Image (cartoon, helix red, strand yellow):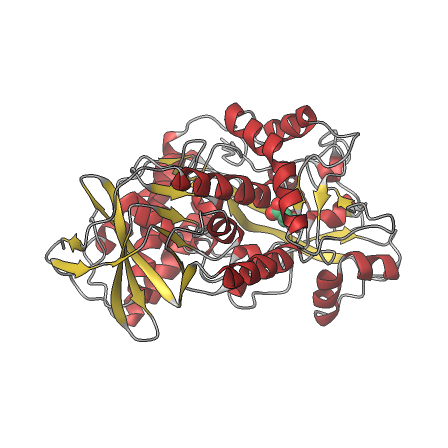
Length: 513
Ligand code: SIN
């Protein structure tokens, strides 16, 4: 694996910061808001707030928020969904500290949905035994939370934003993290920030698959930068497929999600003949953990020869559905689905990544001074399959913990110069080469490392992806479009290697043969 995507040996004068946060989703914003305001902090984003996965999140934030709920129940549901592979200590931290972070959001006036007596309205999703999911504007929790945190951060004054800056690499020296190399997409020039604390909150990898709910920017670039910097990874074979994305084609390269909260309000999965097919498949039927529902749908489609299943919401009144799920209603309507008359056509698609950069309980990776939180990280809370709406909770709890660790860190000031070394020789690829390879990578990952896997196909997939990744180890990176594909092939390779290495079938890593 090459060390840097940069193509010459060069030293940069680094603009000095105490901490650099990469990413503007909920994990990055919440981490930045918890950094000591006396620190000089940079927040770097290639997309802005509305290009993040957080912005799209519909369901909400799961936590123990009522007297009838208990930590033990939330922990058990998390473990059961994670097929036993969760790290018990990380789950305990998540579940026990989560309510405090929801309280913090309430104090910061994130506009949660409340009933007339001022209590949080709680939803339910797959794998949860009871209602414990706080939400905003029905199905726009991510958008509303990100907006509010972004506003607070721009009011805070101690943060320097770097918009439209692409993370090229994390620079390291013998002491660990030393800073970052960025590419300013507006001015088309490189820029280096030096810092002994780098918090990665760059989100997921969905775009390495052919069909995903993730936004265009979810290409795993932060993850790939961490791997090049020497950070360890974990659970790279664990890819989550959401059971219900709308059968309506991609807009901006992503599929529209029909939140699991719709089934939480009683919607039922049916085949094309109108038959409910989840009964008897799992004690929680339509609200079984996500990997199980996804596989049941695919099996049912194989049995019937159909290309889609349906969500029957007909027991809900039009008023209730429009009020509870305003964004889903609007999108269905746009696609010509009449909710009181039609079933919603759905199909599973890639949605979330349980694997990532391995961290300890304070978000620190195996590279000193490099932290990770949110989807880019693998804190161990999700195991082999994430419990619904635990992801935003993880962003909050472990984003805050990264900041707390930085606040008490005694790592010294960053070096003035950041030195990068280049590998040679490098070759240039044409735009046509790039599009062909991108298509090939996405197709191979979807075919070989989807929700149902076969050993022989995984081996074939690994060989194909290894060939691609080897080519991108020697590609001249003139701009982020090329860097993106280097990152995607590296992440794809790690997924393929991990999937081939794990011989047991567990959670999202389901091997049919
Ligand atoms: C959903 O609303 O179904 C997705 C929430 C999540 O990914 O946990």
